Amino acid sequence: MKDKIRIASGQGFWGDLIEAPIYQVTKGEIDYLVMDYLAEVTMSILQKQKNKNPELGYAKDIPELMKRILPICKEKNIKIITNGGGVNPISCGKAVLKIAELLGIKGLKIGIVLGDDIREEIDEILTSGSELKNMETGESIVTVKDKLLSANVYFGAFPIVEALQNGADVVITGRTTDTGLTLAPMIYEFGWKSNEYDLLSAGTIAGHILECGAQSTGGNFLGDWESIPNFAEIGFPICEAFPNGEFIITKHESLGGKVTVETVSEQLLYEIGNPQEYITPDCVADFTSIKLKQSGENRVRIFGITGKPETEFYKVSCSYADGFSASGSLTYSWPKALTKAKVADQILRKRLELLNLSFDEIRSEFVGYNSCHGPLARELDEDLINEIQLRVSVRSYDYYSVERFGKEIAPLILTGPPSVTGFAGGRPKPNEVVAYWPALLPKKLVEPKVEMLEI
Amino acid sequence: MKIKLIDIAHGRSGDKGDAANVGIIAYDNNGFEIIQKYLTAEKVKRHFTGICFGEVERYELPNLKALNFILHNTLGGGGTVSLKLDAQGKTLAAALLRMEIEVS
Image (cartoon, rainbow over all chains, first blue to last red; front, side):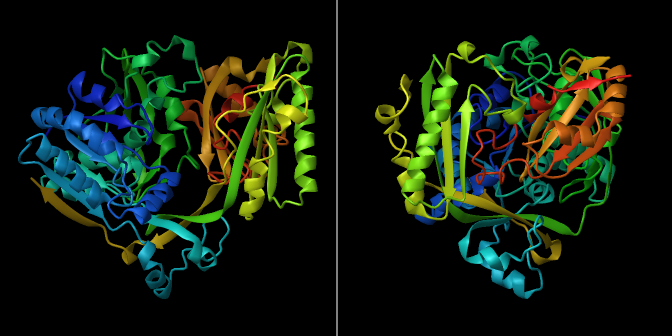
């Protein structure tokens, strides 16, 4: 058994710094590179791509990235784990194999985790007694069944562990918890058992710290952010994990950013609910047990973590089509920029009313004044306001209304208040609104599957 | 005595469906005693009048010198349904740090 492994975060979401994983594998020693690509909205986008082309449906950045890192990872024996397989992990794996072939890499094993996509099995699940009730409203999924775009179970770390046990150099999954990507190599390397809940919780919390990339190393840090060095080359987090569940969060020395108790604490609080019940498929971790200590420059030691057994359910995330929205904006300059923007907003609303369009919501925001903090924004002497961007957004089940709204923005330039600019990029087009349906599914109703591809 | 929350704490916020989570972290133990005593769910709810339209849940994490607030019915439907510029509530931690606390 290894006495320490180094797990590096390479992406915090699909769209994160493209160079980050390259830095992680070249600027110092690591054993694992983990990359989270899937936000809830991503699954529905990927499903739409797969509907158009059955070969697609995964994070398309992956083959391009693999071209750059596979030779290095193969040489240094760095294993790669990612959930970027989206709704088509097999095709993603095949695309990576093709890259390996082009690069002349031999003896590469890719583990694919399947079985999370339950879109085709909803009827079967319904007949077996689970209604996939919405966790927030309690409604049965039957109400949106015909509008479903995607439906995926969140698997935990163990299917990835199975792939690693099968010798995988690269593991590509569909919907896996972000935390499972980091926990899996610890289970695999240290031989942790599925009932060692304190250890599983420690690995889960390490995963929570890594899952948003540089958000734990100084990115988006609301403390003394001006003290963060070299944002341009910010180092993504690295977890040095030990068999007893303790770990150290650090980063490559030559890169920017900062790892302190403060930067890590902010990430620990990100998007959590009840801190004593952080529920994953593997365990229920207790965030109130976490102890942090600055153990060196850019090194934070984390220990003392406890947790409880996992629940009997998987979380399921479904997405469904729920109408249309569009957003348009114009910018007004001094003098009286805010007043002009408010008058323009009233003119626009009057025109929409005269057209008898139907909207579920019309929202107007004054960017540069109160779009972020709403009623908490400070009143300003209008003479001090240099410019204001008016941003108006609408949502409706009626496509025509949303489309017509998009045609009513530009006319304000010649038919409303003066010193207005910033209408570029054409008329705002209606976007399909994708809504979410969080539900629970008894674990016994679905089985993860691991397949191996090899070259 | 009035204390500006931004002088004693930092934090981070994000989304959980239509709810926002706002984590507030004190810089030191003294600061944590103040937020633990004075930063109640009711005060946070009142602070976010016109932004948060639901319940406010409050959790303590003394080990992190932190409090975690869940603001229900806050993000205009959440996710991609929301028309808000800040649909994920990313700026709400900063919005809470605008608060001034009356300390006796």
